[in-house]
Length: 457
Image (cartoon, rainbow, N blue to C red; front, side, top):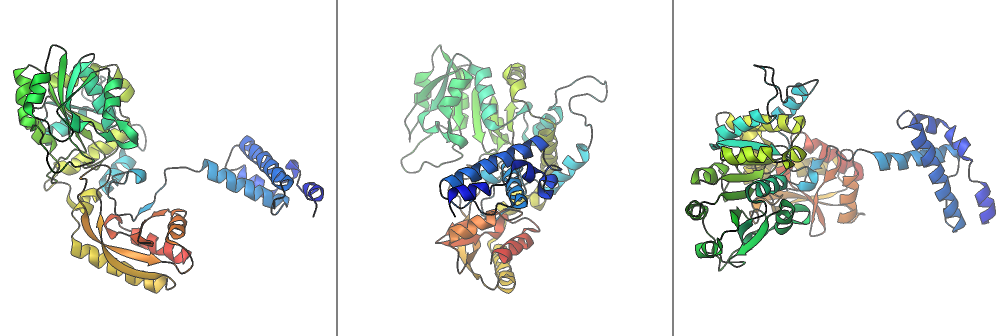
């Protein structure tokens, strides 16, 4: 068929907009968006035809359906429930820590209408919104004071700006890390308005390196815990206790940026309370890594510095909202309970899952898949899970993986199809096999995973 004849087959926009499909679409999206999408699609079909391509079904109803599919794909919500079968416990791309059930209950209960955020119930006066969270953090860590901002990069930024604006901050060269999203510590220093002063070398830094660098322009001694990497071999670093002693002798504050942060013992991560008990003036960490709560940055330490941070003009720009505070308070409540978070907290349940239990779960999943999706080739194999998000680097956790091979699809194609399932399923590829790790499957995820694989098989 020649191009001119094919072009005459293109439906008029008005005819497409009068179809039942377009009418249904306008009950879901603003009519002007539907109109614009139909016009854009018809124009794309015109260009495809002019270039000799196949425009497909040009019936008005079919064109309206295609416009709807494009609009849905473009404007669909990005934050959706998914199945994390990757074995990465704190998967940044999948929202890091999974909320404990009690946190979800608190969000539903406390945020179903108006909620008390920054009003004192005793006097009816305005108070700091993070007051309750600060009290809970103090009880858990022994901190004299605490506050919360929107992530640990923000906590580091406001701490540096508050403690040492316009002055030098001494940091070991080996601690100039790059954190997620390609943000580097030197960039944070620049944004905070402080002067970076490197001491020591990449692999070895000694007390004398700090002592020799201290001068009239020095405003702060900083330790950054290497949460997302490990330096091994011929290495040396100054223990925090020695750095604090040096700071006291020079009348300089000492800050400890822990990154992941841990409220309970999780080897080899340092505990927040330990840094504070040694005398650190300020400690910063994340709320959504080893604490397993919502994304936020936590500052703990001396009342003088916390109060200065709260008065910093940056604080309002970096403060958290009611949803973050509600989720954080509910998460901290699990740590305050006798026995700690335990199995009530998905992150800790996954961290402490025993190898025999994971092997049993993998075997059970293999049996179900062989029964319900017999066209798939399913097996089990040993593997390792990861903590993720820069926490406990190099600390592989032994697990048992369920391996899946599709007779006609490559592992890449199968993994892609799983990501387009409802809900999306994220797995990993090992040796050209799609592998799922039972460690990161939440209650009910097994059923969703089996259903998704049954459909693609």
